[in-house]
Image (cartoon, rainbow over all chains, first blue to last red; front, top):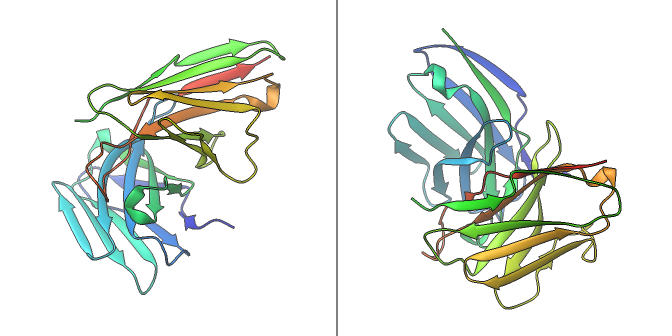
Length: 113
Length: 117
């Protein structure tokens, strides 16, 4: 049973527009959520995180929204740039990350010129 | 920022041999490191939690005797795949977090591509 779900395997967005990546989770014990960006044959690179006491966190072009009642979070990238093309993983943890992360399957974001 | 180094980046070995993968935290001490595994087009799956000075904690379904973990110092954890078989071929990634308390993002190494022939 997958506790973190990313239902869109891929997403294509035009350069300059907003990219919205979605993630759903089932474990109500999760209290810390993260987004990672990954290129093939490389480890994930941390992008942005949010704790369960917040509903929004912003860092430059990246904003993460958390809706606890819906067990849903999303990553907004605006404006989208060609260098944003990669696989994006949503991850969640209990105890603020002390027990490791549970990852979704990833969404391949393609930014079209 | 925090840097995690993993070595080797790729390795090819014959069936039945053992392979050791190293994970180092370069600019911080990590009492806990994590080992993940990723199959093509799949999620990263947590294999085990490596604790400095004590035994590793393995996730359900991960064979302890096959995947030996040693966390000998605060900056080094090793994963040894023993008696490797072709089905062990995968992408192995380690991660660690600076000891700044809760809600500290995990930083990942660049992974090791293991191919068993």
